[in-house]
Image (cartoon, rainbow, N blue to C red; front, side, top):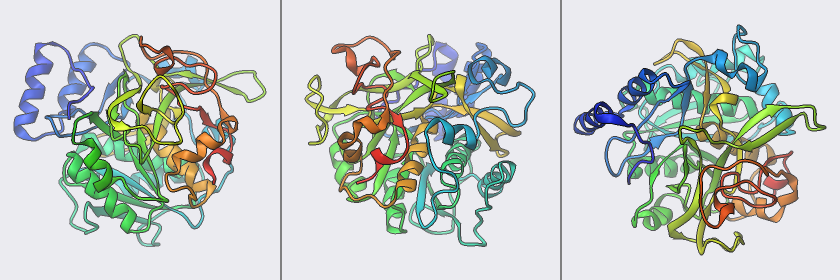
Length: 406
């Protein structure tokens, strides 16, 4: 797989080449290059070599720059949207998730994952979720207790994922499955393990370029009827990534989420920046079109299906100490995927063989995102928000649970 993440300049190219040779995640190199350019946020992961995936988390460097977009007080701790904001924006019930198990699939290990997640939960008055109580499990890609090597970069992704699940479905049980590396075979094995351990909702906030191997991955790793598998669409703007392109998953795009004076109290547009970052979308080169997807400008699988907040300028609060210093603000479609997986959990055990089909059966039960674009394309709906279906935001964002039930 090729990565859509594009560090620029000779130094970045050398750094990524070195990372590939050493088998590192490439994150420190990408972060340094971006920070040197004064970017308001940095990509915490980068794919080091073909066949590897990148996480889609974006860490905000200067929280004060987000104040005008979010309305969050700059000196508040924590800054960024918290659980009450997200539940309000998406018309979701509080204290949900009881009786459900949500899995998070990531690469490498975060040794502080459980403690950091429970600091987040305590801050917002959410119930603790610990391994001692049986609420939380942290396992390797085959379900064992010998965890992979730790990674400060993927730890940011892990903290983001766990905090978003906590925010939306605080009473659900959580399984964190950590792949040995960020290869698609290891991450796919982790997905299979998550399902075998009883998760009916599995979030995947990573991806890479498409390849001819993808249809084989579809059947080997993502063919789990009745399980809601969500996958972030990517942060590289217009263009398709895998496994979001799999017809067996719910591909999750991203929006900029802002408070306003409307009846809803919020507005959303396609997430995109002048630097070329934004929600991934487009027409797959390899994966066939699922029967429930009816858009006519793409003969194969179209990305995305639904969406949620992803713009780091309207980012979410996260607590991270391994590779971080505590409270931070994050964005990227790494935020939107676990949000949507948790919305599925609030709605109950999926009844459709491929749960993404439910949204297409209930399109009016979503907040339609009609403004913004993530680039130039033809036909235009593949990269431009509009009435009804569009690529960057799919059918829209949650407005209650009706679009996520059978």
